[in-house]
Image (cartoon, rainbow, N blue to C red; front, side, top):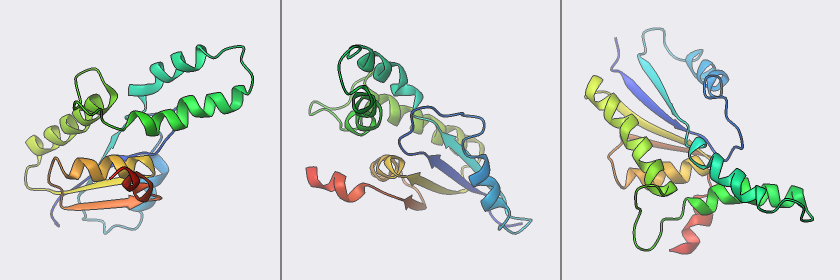
Length: 158
């Protein structure tokens, strides 16, 4: 049997995510192409729920104003991207950047306890690729895979 490989999956900007089924088609598509004896485990990390209530509150404050569609897009999609920028004083508990990294650290720690010698892969799509790249500066991974990445745009701030 081949060595175990653990994939941490980070989604892009989404308004609502069905945590049970969001990655099902993606994972099944990969599994169809793997050798039967390949031991690959997938670990979805849903960071969307960390912002959902805050974004809904922000959007509710704009009720009754014009251009509700654009305001909704700004509250959710643009809000996800802006929320990921760490504050200059550094991340603190309760803030999205801190909570997101804690969520990911906890997921990696659980896998490291149960399978310390496995190959660790972090795969991010869209906003998830920026999160994955930043996280790789904090924790070592064997491989980083990005898809549809906005990393180029985030590089503007540096």
